[in-house]
Length: 86
Image (cartoon, rainbow, N blue to C red; front, side):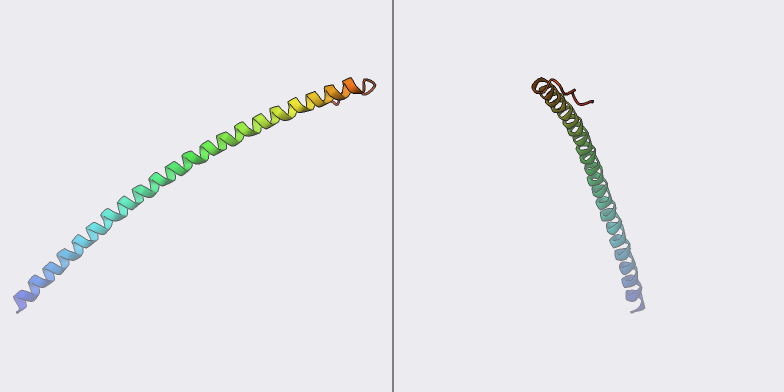
């Protein structure tokens, strides 16, 4: 009987070690997946930031252009007024 309990104890310990090893494998796998997602999110954030900077640049150009056209139009329509300073 004691021999059977000893074998059962060894099997239980081996099963616990196998379960712990499987748990570690799964944990590492999930960690790698999370890291991959983090890297992709970071790249998307960089692209969004670049697009926002490009949009701001284009809006600044459009605002300067419309301001110049408005100033020129105002000067041509009302020659006694000076164009607005830039």
